[in-house]
Amino acid sequence: MNLKTSSKLEKVLKSGHIAVTSECGPPRGSDPKAVTEKGKLIKDHVDVVNITDNQTAMTRMCSLAACIHLKQMGIEPMLQMVTRDRNRIALQSDILGAASFDIHNMLCLSGDHQSFGDCAQGQNVHDIDSMQLLQTVRHMRDNGKFLGGDDIKRPPDIFVGAAANPFADPFEVRVPRLAKKVACGAEFIQTQCIYNLDKFEEWMRRVRERGLHEKVFILAGMTPMKSAGMARYMKNRVPGMDVPDEVISRMAGVPKERQPQEGIDICVEAIQRLKEVEGVAGFHIMAIEWEEKVPEIVERSGLYPRPQV
Amino acid sequence: MIIADKKPIEEIIQEVKDYDRLLVLGCNECVTVCEAGGKKEVEVLASALRMHFIKEGKEKKIDERTLERQCDHEYLEEIRDVIDQYDAVLSLACGVGVQFTAEKYHSTPLIPGVNTCFLGANEQRGMWTERCQACGACILARTGGICPISRCAKRVMNGPCGGSSAGKCEINKDLDCAWQLIIDRLRDLGRLDDYEIVAPIKDWSTERSGGPRTVVREDVQV
Image 1 (tube, rainbow over the protein chains, first blue to last red):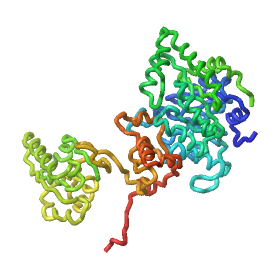
Image 2: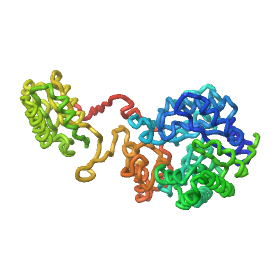
Image 3: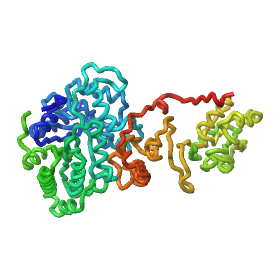
Image 4: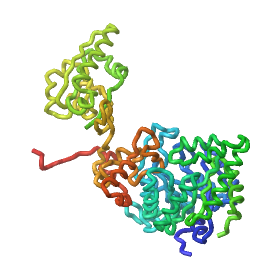
């Protein structure tokens, strides 16, 4: 097995297992229990846990600190980093900081615009973009150099990936955009939440057409819905989200108290269908403030127990 | 051109209320074209201020003048012989004109009457939109003639981000996604393959980040 890093995710994927990742949003406060309790709920059912970086531009505990909390309890963390809040000095510095704690996974993102969050009057940075952040991590790791050209003592040992949204517009560049991320050094992809399975499968068909599934591990993003209201909200209010009307009517078609279970069922059925799609290397289960449901989803999808690598 | 917008009259009154002799100074360039600080706006603002202070029972001298340019030594000299007649100048020029006037008339307080907004164009009557952030290193040749720095809310150099929806930006449904425009134009130019060229990390030292900028042209210096 040709491993480039010490990442458990890399090992799981390159061993041919279907990977399972999940995510925890850090708290809007400094209590570490808010992270570690979520970690405990899912640690035996997933390979790696992403920690989001001030998602929806709401100020939270930093991703790096939350990753360290997980790492200290034996969970393999994935550092999410957005280019919205840090310039190239801070990004490189935080990458080294993460590497010093042997954090071996990183997801490069641009981040939601600050106007969605609690600091709408703040500046955004965007010194580099998410593709250039991928290049930066790879440059630091593979060449052992800073962007400025100096050598790094003990370069970062980080498996690096990016997000992809198969549903955002314009659809015609969705696959070329993935190709660009691969060209920039993405080793894995975690996609946006998938509800429109037909459209996702069409995207995957085009991905395979270009052979990209052989160059990058694609983890399909899954978020169970808690209610018909959440489904409508995601359809109408969340940028770049594609929720077909059938999904909303299926959720709305059961009594309110049954809707959470219906949401879990939809999620499990989607995973079972997408497991069969060539090129889908794993699943990224984002159960937003519903982490306790991750074990059930993983077990019912036939993805438990997790491989020991 | 430089696009400016009128400041609220309440804010202006607050700034000028302590001065008894005021010169409202317009500029005949960009702010005239964008109808924020030309001769017409000087007249309207000066009249409004006079009426306000008369209603308050205050007697003030409020004069009007509009220069060809406030960003030019030569035209600014035209008020040298009258500047001492005023306690302050309310300039309706862009931030450049206000500062250039302040530098020239060092002991006269300068108050801006407009907010300088951006470098843009007159898209339709009464509507101006941004086109350039003066980054000092133009990349338009590589982006189909559409600038992601000034027109993308995240100035993404390799876009679009995941928030592009039906051609619009995630921050505002009325705002075009710059990358949708770039892709549309590349397609129309038959250059859609260029989309896959990765834009390198940008050198921002020619932009604001590099500190206040100077252009020196020896070929036109005297």
